[in-house]
Length: 228
Image (cartoon, rainbow, N blue to C red):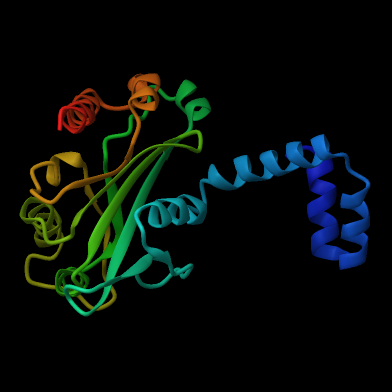
């Protein structure tokens, strides 16, 4: 974070609205654009919060974001079921600078994870008519958004298998499966899988940042959509 942006944030946190307005009015248009761009870059790449990435993912898929830490990430009305359909967003962000110092660089694989998971939570999600939104970013740039029902058989099977391994006799009070993870392999055959966002140019630009199998999977999806 540069000093100029820090001063603005400091005034916002410690000063008055009048002081902040005066400081911003003294900036040129180009300076304001540069500061805004810096702030967005920091926010969307934040390793401690996926809020902005979740917001983009949920909104692009046509859901209304909830902006809460507890519960699902968004909802949309459904005439078919006469109520709201919830969604759970799982955005991955790959930081290319971090990858430069990794012995084994990360690759986007269409995956995600559920933290502190339990059999009880799985049952709740299965009953919730829930849709999953899987997205991938490279340095904050959106590459894809995929949507499928939580109750996709192979997806639920993957989660259930991890829970059974951790809790073979059922949930234990105060204990959790810290990370129930998955990749695109666990929902790729879902018949109602939808491509919400995917551009050929971006996909090819970031080919090296995706696992080979996942890149081939998305490339095939683009080809199929083009040939319709």
